[in-house]
Length: 179
Image (cartoon, rainbow, N blue to C red; front, side, top):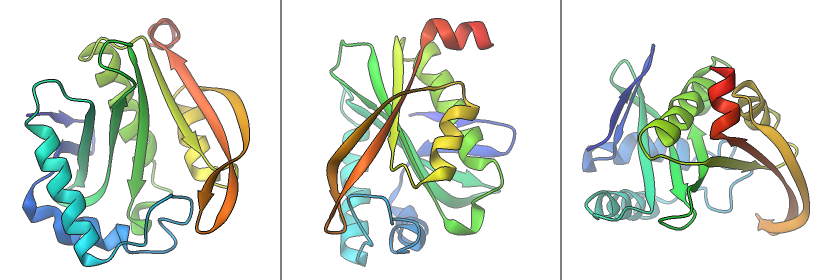
């Protein structure tokens, strides 16, 4: 069971009790504007939670998808997806309830997950991606010392439109030096 405590957040495994909290942000068109999924129906949210709970029991986990809570309230989700079990690389992702945007919570969550990836999962590299118009997301990456490594043109269909993707990354050696 993964539980990570930060100054303000508790980052933990998802439970069946999280359906309503996840649905609050996953069904919001503003929150999922740059996502390939959503807005979710209630059934899609329930299915998402079930999938995450099932992946938590695997011995050889390929992802660490976690609930983000503040004062006991679920306010988002995110985590690390391993890029092959032995590659030493993972992709960071996150999604927050719109009510909590602009408070540094995404930055705090990303910092905790990057640290977890390097210290606990022995990763060599953490990457993250976002739409070029998602200024809040790429600022989170930059505040955590990630370097913009690329701009991929029209590589994802999002809400019926081909969109560009910014790619960021940080190496363990860079993270250790920033420390």
